[in-house]
Image (cartoon, rainbow, N blue to C red):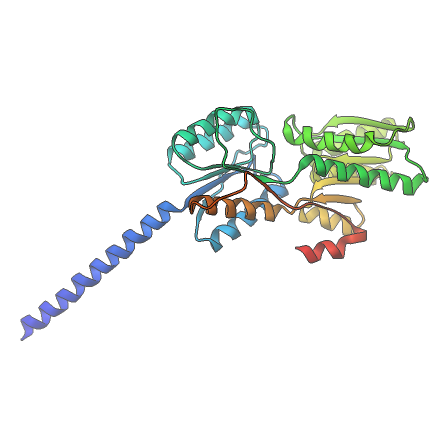
Length: 323
């Protein structure tokens, strides 16, 4: 009798062990199947922290395991290439990259294509410069349109200030590359539609950095305080410019691009004038949702356009309702 009971207990233990093993194997298989990666230029910007937060939220909702490795600096394109190629060698199931250097990343895309790993580009709608590669989808906002909207906003505020379009505008540019090129071109397109000999525009590099922008504007204001507006190709640069203007006791129009939370607070507090919000968290969410569709063999758009909006004190409530 005791032997039968032991046998019964032993059988139960064996069955239970088998169930645990099966569940464990199933879980491991599911995890392996769902590992994806998203590679920003760096995590030094509030913008990329926002896109990463949105991506993580979407990944949790879709039961995807997400890795977000990044270089230490937004200028280190070789480190980014190494990260991407390491992820390819680890056989992640899908990749999304915001390339620091479009030309440099193309060879990595070729390797991803050869390994049959879906490849997406986020924070850009500009096709990578190679006809030898396949990118499943580009997710981001129209950066030229963003620049144009910023240009129109500056023109509107100059007209409000002077009852005419005149003054001196400084454009603070990021590192060389398509982000800087597209945003600057859009801004200049808006400016060029107003033919006015009294409108002066100058451009200076500030490397996407707040401290660099502050230093540039401090030098400019020391030489000439007759500056009316500053367009930063990122929020951080506009914020650095605003801080320099405050310390120099100069009233400036300052506008950036990103819509980062700290920039929104600065607008509320009257430190900066406006931003072109690109809803960073939404870019992250759209990116992961697009990857999820690809993994499920669902059709995705080649270009997934994300929303943008000029935000100032005047429309702050409307903006906050959209979050």
